[in-house]
Image (cartoon, rainbow, N blue to C red; front, side, top):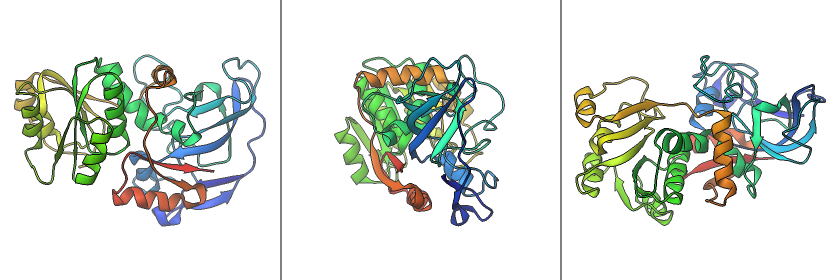
Length: 333
């Protein structure tokens, strides 16, 4: 079977290889024919060598069709469309220790492969009516936005949300918030992308390159109250402005570190806002199941910017590195 694996040398060294077929599933396992994946910043870290691996099958996100179920599996049957879990051992409850040691495409083999045999608990059903590429986007980006706003933020109609940028997590946050009746502000360095965000329902947009004080701009948009929720994907370079934008007692969910992994935290400003700053990494299988049920009701379909064939995975990562995408980048085979 075909697979894309890491090799010394980073992005330019990843390669398409032939691997043995994984065979039939054992007790508690399912065999899945994979057909879709999507790119995330975490995958880029693996493929670029920031997370050293060699011979690791890439990609945390995977979606496909169940071909066979092992003894004792009752949740799935052949023909079911399924999607992978970012933390396959985290079924429910509080987060588990271990970092990314059990994350597909990092600590264990991922889903840039034709077939996989894994525990049934490493998958959930895919949302009804979603293509395999669309389904694959929920594993990392979609579930992260869902957990930030719904599981942690307890989002409700009439709330205000600030999303930073127009990447996968932020566009998912925009779509979830609008589907649940919240008002959304969003930032970008591209006026064209801001116009596209408006088409998806963003009420207020601000170009952060033109307005260094974008946090105050968002605060003023709320008539001096501040937003209820900030989906913070930037990290140390954006946190101060996010604190400026949030309301007294509001919620800032720290998801990404696009501006770096270290930096100063404006503690006085954070304390003055009495805001809750939470750090999260994706979510549990139970949370993904809840998200799938919500998507089954027809809330929305994810925004797919561009889709690449599996053999062109390196080109897909180059496109991600260019920063030109809006929403998710997909891979299909």
